[in-house]
Length: 93
Image (tube, rainbow, N blue to C red; front, side, top):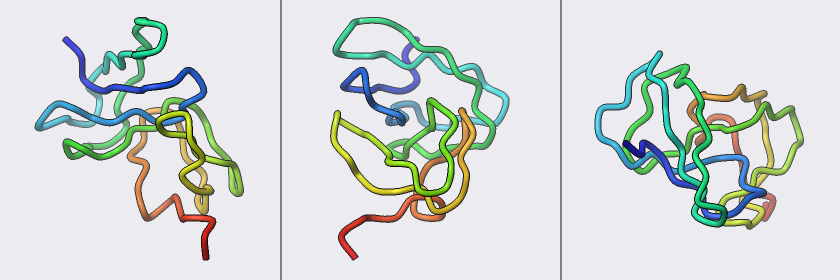
C-alpha cells in the first residue's frame, strides 16, 4: 500500500495520500521518478494532502517538493514529522 508520494529524487518531503495517518505508522512513500519505495515512520498524525518529512532538515535548509524549492525550514524537522506552515516558510517574503 502507498501512503505518500514524492515526484522527484531530490524531494525532501512527500505528500500523504491516505486518510487517517497516525503516529507510529510505517509509511511506504512512492518515488514516481524511480518507481522505488522509501520507508519512513510517521512521528505524528498527518492529514491527507499534507507533507511528511523524508529527511532530517535543519534551520534554514531548503525544502523540495516536486523537485522544486518550496521554502525554508524555520524549525528543525525529523524524518516522519508533519512538514507544514509551522516549520516551513516561503522564501518570497
